[in-house]
Length: 365
Image (cartoon, rainbow, N blue to C red; front, side, top):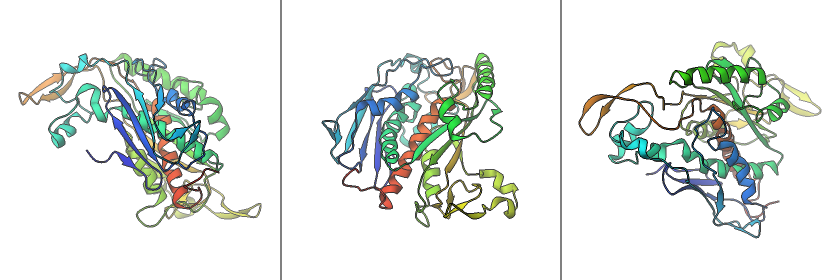
């Protein structure tokens, strides 16, 4: 199966299945000499792992990362870095009864139509567990970017129909995002989100929402015309996350309802630097970064695993049937997608920093 690798100068390949022995990633392009430990990776994995609250799957995975290669005496070698996380709390029993009955909203059917044979345990390769490798690699990308003064932040801006009504400052996002299980930087809105999510969950249903990610401090000049535009590659990376059905850059769909006089960001001088007075473009014009904050939002569909009865087809008998799922599910996936979306944005920006010659590919400085 192709499609498991992303990046050009800074490249990652994820591997593994939800209920397999382990899951992981190989990272190519990390320069030699950067301090790197398992603790650096673990911090990000701890944000993604299940079982942290009543708003997440109760699957109890420690998600302890093991660095297998590319690091010696706490420093990167400039060679491929391979990392794995072992799957510990695996229970495939609920999937045996439905192994020939594709779950509505999941990739079960499309994988079967394409390959004819699939790992039905927990979704196999198409499961959210695949994102472990993305987040582990994203932790390295974040560290590379931080050394260049670039910070990646994110939070849930809508869930179960409850939305944040205004743009929040980076300071507020940093302060509040880990203080509530919704990972929403507006604590009052977060409480309402949680109540709405749990109300739907009590009915055996799930909810979706929106997640925002920002890159602060990204320099101008990242991105290449015409098909390697920065926003195009960010959209590709974010859309590759399971359950993401739309990507918005800057003002996104609101731009379709604006006039040009409203949508265009005035160009001004501020302390001797050319900047935009506003940021409707989300930090990217013509596929090239402007130096303003890069802002993207993703639309996350409701978690497809629900306990309400749903219609499907038994592929073994080619008969219509009903399916009622049993297992461990997230009632809303937005909080756990936040670190995944941050990782994907970091990976794309790190790749473009190498491609623009702004990070030395041989030696970390």
